Image (cartoon, rainbow over all chains, first blue to last red; front, side, top):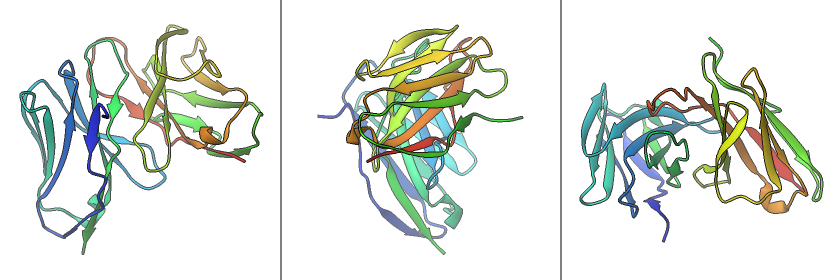
Length: 112
Length: 114
């Protein structure tokens, strides 16, 4: 079993839809949870990070962490064709380490 | 403000050869991490450098080695290349002072081993 599981998709939605992306994990010691966006042939770009459980909102993006269920989500409101990319979740044990454990990524396509 | 820069962007090698990849961190950053991203997979942590020392290492063989220079730039070396080493190699930089979650990635070096 992988430490971090993520549905690879692809996920196709119409423009304006609410998108829900999810990851599950097995290591209860993870403290920091990140979401990255990666366009084709580009490096990952940090979208959101959260510490421990709870919600965090930034514009059209909302990140949720449920440590009791070992489940994290990223919601994208009013999705745009420019949101079409691969979304990677990542987790780490905490301060002092940049050893992130990434999911495989979910490919998202927003149709105009 | 230049972000993380990597070179070369693409390269082709044959099995058994050696390769060196280079990275310049974002301005103000002093910590460099290297990741390997195989096609269709998420990045996997290779190692992290701070103050010119390897601070943490992932599950990669000794064929993978690195170096950090006094100006914080870094190199990744891979010896005795295998077909399975074909991947996108990503460099990421950050500030070691505290943890903000902000790991900035470069565009990567795409290595093909024939």
